[in-house]
Length: 124
Image (tube, rainbow, N blue to C red):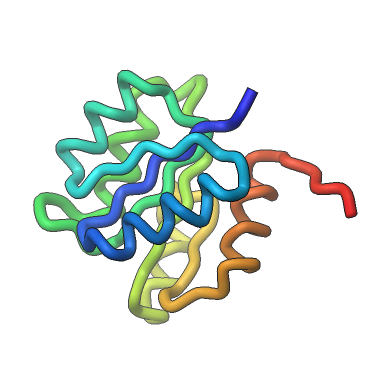
């Protein structure tokens, strides 16, 4: 069964690109443009991984990370943060996120981090 990823990104072009990257590699992808939408999808679809943009229109991505981890703390999936600012790495150390990637990013690095967080093993 394909693993499900929730992508939360307010910029439509970035959201569609991330969905394409993951879909091509066999993942099922749900997308949200806001924190409010993300919480609803997260509760309904139960993703295996959530990828959150730090800057969202209705809530800080770090706060959304905390909210999502509290939906069901016992079964909370890993969360990766995406940020346009390398300065956010200091905040990552204190966050609930499991990993972080700075934009712009290399697709291969993104996929490697996702596979690691999901425990996917890729044979060569």
